[in-house]
Amino acid sequence: MSISVVDRQSNAIESDPHYQQRVDLAAALRMTARLNMHEGVANHFSLAVSDDGSRFLINPFGRHFANVRASELLLLDAHDEGTMDGPDAPDPTAWAIHGAMHRNLPQARCVMHVHSKYATALAAMDVTGLPPIDQNTMRFFDRIALDEGFDGMGLGDEAERLTTTLGDKRILIMGNHGVMVVGDTVARAFDELYYFERACETYLTALATGKPLRVVSDAVAEKTARQWEDYLDRVGLGDAHLREVHELLARAEPDYRN
Image 1 (cartoon, rainbow, N blue to C red):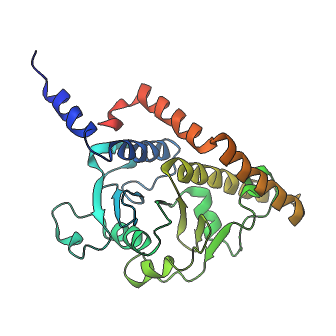
Image 2: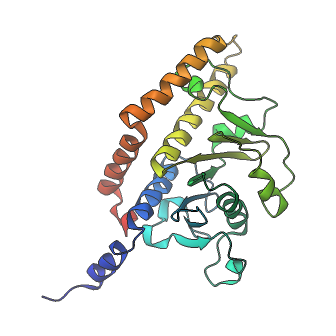
Image 3: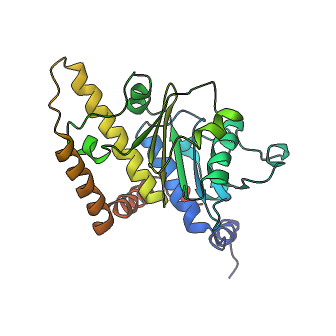
């Protein structure tokens, strides 16, 4: 029995040693578009695939989040100085920011950077973080880094500087810019990004009422944040979240796996 071109392509893709990582990252990109947290053909997600973190997958230049397929993700080396000279060169800001992150912070396995509506609004405000006013905002209590040194688009020195501001945090509010989230896996990073945007939405919606905020004590906020961490590790919430994303996409737009 002959094998169709589609079947041959599918087999070739699935033989890729990074196939599942590609599929996970493509799924996160597609769902981010569905949630309207994208920026057209800008913004980028990346995932380290080497032990030292320097080799990473990233969405290609000019491709909308809603159209990205697993096979289209670029495989780059953060130490390759000739990356931007190739025919499939990534977006310059993607290479600058994500290249610097994977080159300088091997613990940042998955890096997601967006200009989502509510997180970017927060980044435009003169604030130091999120006040603990509900369970979602409490998840990030004292766990957010803030970059206050915006000096233009994320190129060159600006990109290198960003890697020094994250510290041991998973969330970086990029002042006047957007948000960056890092995680050990696509599942964990995407879950953090989703809940951080939700938390920002709650905060800004509450502010819009003009009523006083019901802010809990630092002790309660820290207790809740630790409960979140235990919950995430114990039940694998991020993995469950991504698993459901895969199921939604498999029904509605299964080509993301191609």
